[in-house]
Length: 118
Image (tube, rainbow, N blue to C red; front, side):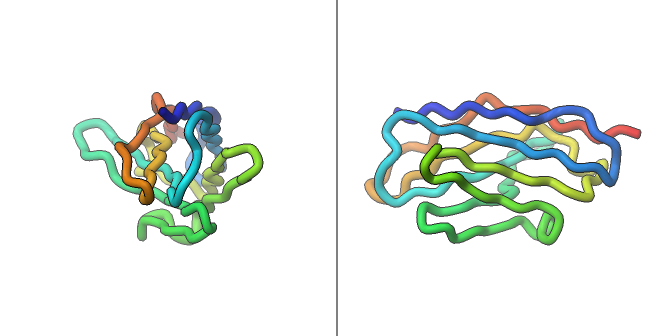
């Protein structure tokens, strides 16, 4: 089992910044990635950014250059620094733990709301 605890969402004006945090605990081993997905009302949950256990990062085109994912391996924590936020970034953001080897089900955080409003 892996537990994920997210924090850092909130209300921000367009152009502003927020930093999300996701702390993982439990069976953190193997080759894995941690990342952030988001889901807006009426839409599917989409990948925002991901970082693997060796530090490789992946970003959605829509956030490339504005968002940065990073990790503190000692704390099993990943961060999503979100800059130049846009109204279309409004969504519930979910932390994800995906173990590649050995294979196991994905784990998800409870979600944190990010709302852009002027």
